Length: 274
Image: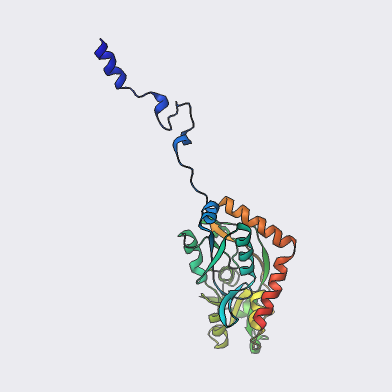
């Protein structure tokens, strides 16, 4: 009988020793390791990596500063302020616009700041901060064609350029259905397409257009009104990075509140014109 009782006892594991058991007296997570948050990982690494497409003045663009090529622009100044508030170094990665979201999802960058609009489609795969800047969308044409292209209908059957993967590509497709969109990754290449008459018009944000039109008097704004002209820019982070979004929003609140972003935009436009 003693032997039978011993065998019986050895064949049953007490419920309280089962990790995560519904009948245990402790929470299921008691024996699991807390996952490190994105913000904690960044602070631990001592740096934060930003992805951007540096061909979009005055947001971000290349400029020779003290005989050295640097990425400048008001987006970059915002990124610097975020890194400063987090107490880490800022590292930049320049790539084509359409490669930014894949790079973020793959973990190659920690956040994206590149004049990006938080569309519902993008929000399915990444999280966004609050809107930090809102610009108007404009249509650019050659000066010689200003009187020719005055309405959306006047561009029917024509090629209209837009940055590949950007909001402007969607605008052309949805608001100019009679036109053929030509999407290219770099704004500088789209400007060249305009000048060489490979496209008839270009949809672009006004601050960006202002920067290029100031250096290209043969290009002007068309008197064409888009039905949805306003689009805001926000910072993108990997899905689920709630603490990082909150930290970035604190920086944005400060920069918006003290008018620093307006100052950054003015300074960036001045750099473009130099």
